Length: 434
Ligand SMILES: Cc1cc2nc3c(=O)[nH]c(=O)nc-3n(C[C@H](O)[C@H](O)[C@H](O)COP(=O)(O)OP(=O)(O)OC[C@H]3O[C@@H](n4cnc5c(N)ncnc54)[C@H](O)[C@@H]3O)c2cc1C
Image 1 (tube, protein in one colour):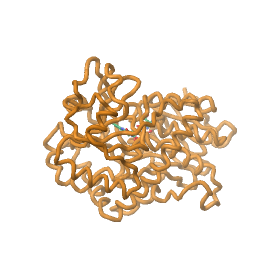
Image 2 (cartoon, protein in one colour):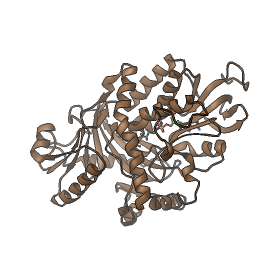
Image 3 (cartoon, rainbow, N blue to C red):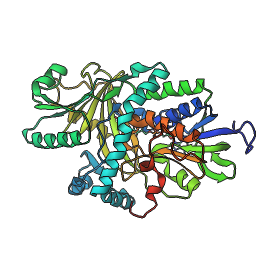
Image 4 (cartoon, protein in one colour):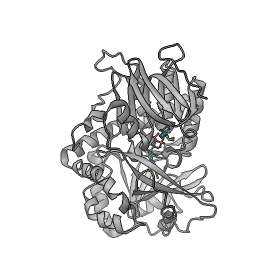
């Protein structure tokens, strides 16, 4: 039995059906409800059980470069033959992944990279303030700790690449501090004395429990009248007055639909808009260590080992790795355990892995590393997906922009507060190689 309205235009028809209750969909639902719209969120699971459940919790405002660089070509053999490397490509997935990889490589030419950096900067530079506004509005400021984050290195030969990275960050307007081994010991005394130093990013932060953030936002949204429905959306179709969604339990009519179902968004986008979208997933893993509270004051990433460790309410979360294996192949949890092995040698004393838990999630990634934040089909379809490694970072600002798009009069070309969102449009993929 469905609890949806079945009429097209009666007073009960929801203004906006949001598909996906991850960090993006839930933040958007709250922002849309605060604009006075009637919102229904539909998700096959409880809010926050997709990628938003187990991410590294890093407000990674410094990450304004594309998800890959040309060295990925050199790393391709290792990706295929080393199942434990930081990057893994499943042989069986290779034919499916090839068109996406081709687009990724084409987006690593100078002009597209410039567009990507500009697009990521616009989002990331607004992210911290947007999160502070959002958390203050629901009385949960303590969920975000703005204590910076640190990139450490341990080999002499890493010093030059680190300096190159620092120069690039400076050009991109990202604030960094070069820390000596001593500065690092002063700030994080449990880290190994063998570490040679690092780069500190003062304008970054971390969430002490990413899943709790979604839960608190969902509570606030419910209090604003947002209706949450636990059903799978199977199909969608537009009509004159809006859209009809077919779910596992019935049909929902809505004046508008917001697609925010992360790595699962592509089929619904194609059905509703008639446009294919080159969305794939970079699978990632975490290992949660419940007995490791208090090891670190802020997130620490290893330059050489390529993973992150974030202090959280429930312990220390080790996270990272990228695996191309699509949405359907089972997780390889030995990749999560590999994170524990990678941590060995980074601390004076090895981490305590008793009662550790593993997790795998689907990062939603587009080949130009930018999300889609857009409104199409005469305003009947809103889009907020494809935030790759940065969905948590960018959720609050995405929600502000989506809410402004939704209430903007159709005749208004540009609103005073809404920036130019052309970098995030869906139709940037209308050419075959973009
Ligand atoms: C290991 C790892 C570490 C990460 N670390 C960070 C980090 O430190 N900082 C950062 O900013 N980002 C990080 N990310 C990325 C971030 O987690 C994602 O970008 C973000 O969670 C995406 O949010 P979302 O709401 O778009 O998708 P999701 O959280 O995946 O939510 C999508 C929702 O849609 C639902 N859904 C899908 N299809 C349907 C359907 N047909 N019908 C109904 N519901 C449907 C799903 O059930 C799910 O709940 C990390 C990701 C991973 C995997």
